[in-house]
Amino acid sequence: MNYIKMIIFSGSASLVIAKKVAKHKNQPLGEIEVKKFPDSEIYVRIISCVKDKNCVVIQSCKTNEDIIELLIILDALNDLGAKHITTVIPYIAYARQDKRFKSGEAMSAKTILKLINNSSDRIINVNCHFLNEQGTFNVAEHFNATSEFYKKNMKSDDFSKISDGNFDKISRFFEKKSYYFDDIGFNEKLKVKGSKDTELFIENLDAFTAVAKYFENELDNKNLVVIAPDKGALNNAKRAAGVIGCEFDYLDKTRISGNKVIIKPPKNLDIRNKDVLILDDMISTGGTIAESAKILKSCGAKTITVGCVHGVFSEGIKMFEGVVDGLVCSNTLETGVSKVDVSGIIADRI
Image: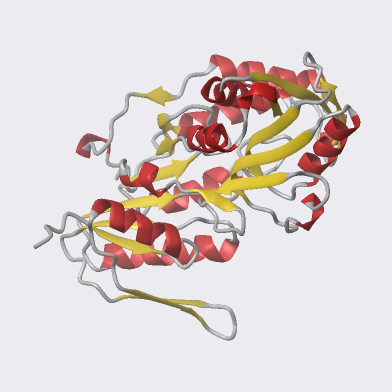
């Protein structure tokens, strides 16, 4: 008879990955009913008994509805007497809204995480967009530092007038800050439910290495180069190249305004007749990546493959047809190209 250590619940956005995590852990998948009313309101009913139980909720949050559903599930578990709640968010929206560039802008990432934190004892995320390392972080310090930087450095309320120098200044500022904490795992001393703005812990898991290992097995590294889509993603490209055993470089991307960028060829490598692998942590619309692929083709690249952890693909993947030779992401979000399974990474952590 299997000893039940936890009950794993799935939100409607993560049914596949939650089942796989439950199988890895040899633990039951909790019984839950989620449905939507005609007026788009969400109905949640927790059917399994959760009183005095350790519960895990797995829900990727790509849409606002996903977030609301998660918050309702968490609140219901608390009301029903759950002993401990671990919230696993393989992908979380709003992670790019972690900084303030204009006067009065909300840091929406902070808002969402605070709401989730209020009903959770532990939060686990996979490759959070604004965290560059694996480990446990007090992201409240990140948000507070962002506010501090804005007050000291941002003189203009117009995003389009912020110079490239200020973007570089932002990068240097946050590189000097360290929000890393020891690998605490399940530590009752760091319960964060209802904590103040000075404490908001997230355990950030790394699936980027798993994506790199996938390509290590799928692509021939003899003629391969890894290209980061911009300088900010260079460290990830370096890590992937180390796993695969090939060279790496990045595209020089200059932001002209809030929605316009200029992309230049790789800085250091000659990619003529090379098999190119473009890697990033996430692909949102895909427009910049598709444009990058076209530029690399014009530079003589033999083949172009694109990979990422989070395949948001908010405008679909049709734009990649005829532009790239391969497109792969993980299953933090379920897509038609989700070929890298991260359920084992999550299962090892909970």
